Length: 265
Length: 70
Image (tube, rainbow over all chains, first blue to last red; front, side, top):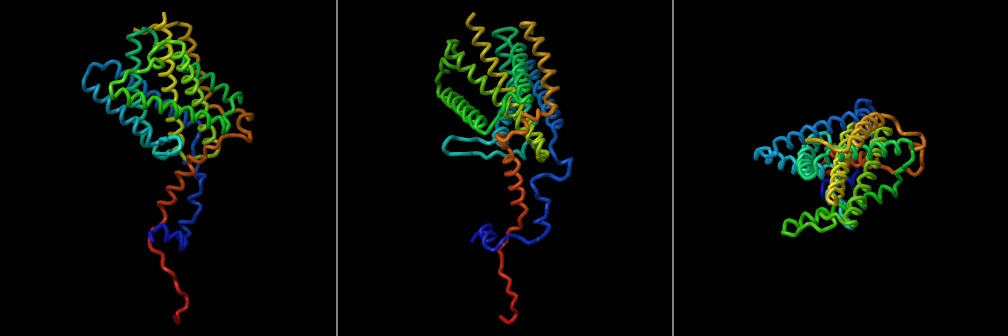
């Protein structure tokens, strides 16, 4: 009989210290509770780190040591993201379960990794179409601000069905991108829907931009609800991580859409 | 190096200000007091349960016999 099954059979410890209210879900100490301001401040710090590393990556892109640091940071950033947010697969369920309590340890690694990624992609896009990066940044914040106002005013209401629909679409897009990446390792080129500028390709980009934007609404809702219900402090880091990652995703998709539109001229 | 449509850039600057200002404000009552809100509390419920499990003292439980005559 294993230790856990023995405990289940014979009952858990009667020690009052272990059964005390110290393990209540709602944190009693206000300094341990999540606040809206805390989440916003952490988002600002994450974006500042992200922009700094993006500029660093942009300026020193030809340096092989910086390229190596970029590669390691991007890899570490993605590992940290999957460790915190988990990985879900249809019909199987959670392959990696979400661990939001890891967010305070990993948030800066994620920010730096995303910064290096954004720096490299932005430099590539700016070289092809000068002026596209600032337009994409502006449009990203236009979309984010519009959705934030729509969310705060109650115009958009993220219900359970809304969350499930957006979650399913997001996982679908993620798996599609993952399969493209695996195919590219075997020498297959990108399909026209990704690299082309046809109406279908632009329509696909618009769909992905819309999904990224809907994910922003869910992030706002997670932050709002966590702060409202006095969630533990680590949810501040988790919420800011989610918001920053979604903003980066939205930015990259808007950049891709603008590149497709520019290539038509 | 940087260029772009100035109207879009001005709009972007205003949007950043709006974004960080309104991110700090509470959502309207219409948004907060609904019955069909999505529930995200499992994020911190599950994590807390894990921490709780870690605090259980593992060991083989032994039955305590009160009857001293046995």
